[in-house]
Length: 493
Image (tube, rainbow, N blue to C red; front, side):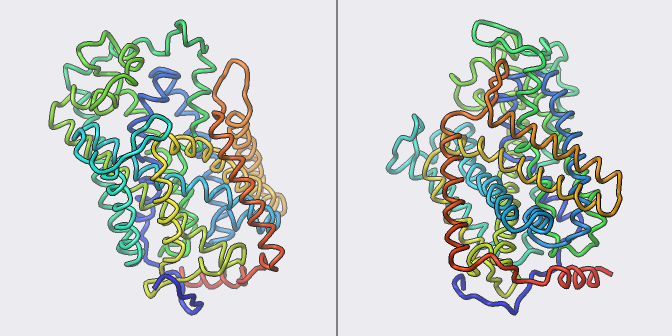
């Protein structure tokens, strides 16, 4: 099933606007939305710094979304940023963009799969800590937990093979559980006597012996997480050929997923510091002590939900977290496999990745995602964190290429509005990449040494892969892009 190459099948147009929105929102809000308030947002910027930074990041993503909307209407093909970069600047740039973007997408799959183990540890203790185990960077990896993570990956590989319509319906159901749970907790916080506005003080992270960042640096430290916090809305163009609605409607889908995502990030951060355990004087003391805590007290959003609504609140937030992890796995699994399919269809990578099963699903590309994600799960959570950090660079590169490609085409068409948004989106994307890649005195928000090393390895692998592929004579366009666009346009009428 997985190893036959066929060219007489095509992607099936089955996704509704709600399905696509669910895929985008489910990718934006994953495990990180629940853990980052306690590990990144509040420790670096406090509640007000988080609110300001995420509002700015949301606005920036809306600018970039404007460019995506323009390019999707111009090139309504699966592949998204890869197609835009290749058509605007040539296949070298197309491969470069796709290589880093695939890292960004692919890294989130094992990140969410292994996060299941963290939520199980927090809520159910050592239930899955059985069998042989080993230690990676101080983190114990247990056979039982890896069995859970890899088992989930295999289940969703099979589910995905049943067709995009079925997978889209599953994603929509999970997103309803995810969003419903978050809204219940927010509503509970609004009326609970344990969630007080005074608990939000101080509004920024106060300076102490180990923390000296000023307000601007605090906001920048959270803002720089924007590429990976919001990566997911850009999975929409990867599903263009499987959406049964016209491309001119995708802007609403992307914009609403971004705005809802920004709201959820901010709301969860405020909830996390509004109700802390009674043994702490405030959120600052609790956040500082998080690394030393276990169970639900070690995850700020779970701890706050329990303090706000008791066991019911913990049950609701746990259901939301699990749903978020599963939507992240499904969404990025689909996005990565479609990106690989598009690259193979254009001859950038072996044609094996372009195989579609009888349901119109790129199962070979999906098998590759499952194998790589499964092997990555074996490395443990610390390595996941390093990969996730460097993957932010890949997201920023994808945003930058889409924006500058939009500016280039808009210049030819004398579209001043698109030119402005394209140039602005490119500058902002590059700025986020620079903040990640280059240490800036006073900010201390660049990648760690481990992430730099992994990024270097990814660049070397990509360079070797592309040189070998070019030497073998690959890299030629295998599809008539304009004819495909015309066929897709006709089918939407």
